[in-house]
Amino acid sequence: MKELFYIIAAISVISAVLVVSARSPINSVIALVVCFLSIAGHYVLLNAQFLAMVHVIVYTGAIMVLFLNIIMYMNLNKASEPRKALLTRVSAVVAGGILFLTLLGAIGQGLTAPPANEFDGSIGLVRSVGTVLFTDFLLPFEVSSVLFLSAMVGVVMLAKKDKVTKEVATADLSPAEMERRS
Image 1 (spheres, rainbow, N blue to C red):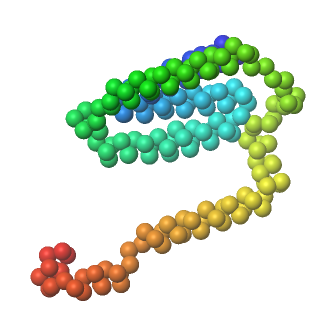
Image 2: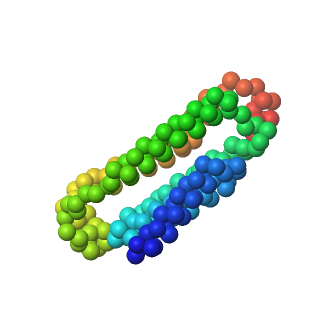
Image 3: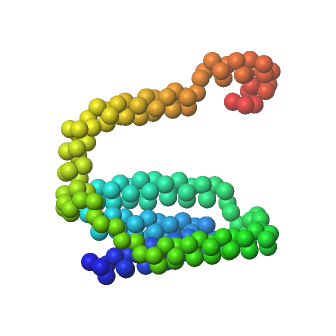
């Protein structure tokens, strides 16, 4: 189990370094997906399977698709990418080095904390999360679902094209201009 943790931790760190150091934004996003999947592996090792699946679905699925779409819409290439000033790059390296030294100092002091509770193997499972969600937190769960439903209806109403606005907008145009636009 310990070896598996170290393997997944190494994958997380290497992919995180690749996210920052990759030349292509697409390669950076792919490395970020690998990093997210390795973090989900850590959740599984902590016996939080529900949290691992939610992490994979939300972050690796939805957020990464959004990132990829934005990168593709921006059409990044070397000619349009601005070059950072030397002072900016040096200050970034210094700030990263100070952060690294701070982390080494914290690890050197030792991170020992006694467990708050004894180990319970059923805490992170889907069954226990569902039981608590539908017994103790049923009212907040239902209120949030009504809130999400009203937000979706609001988005649909805002995105809906209004015929009256279109008619008013075209009322000021000449007949030739209206025919050209249609």
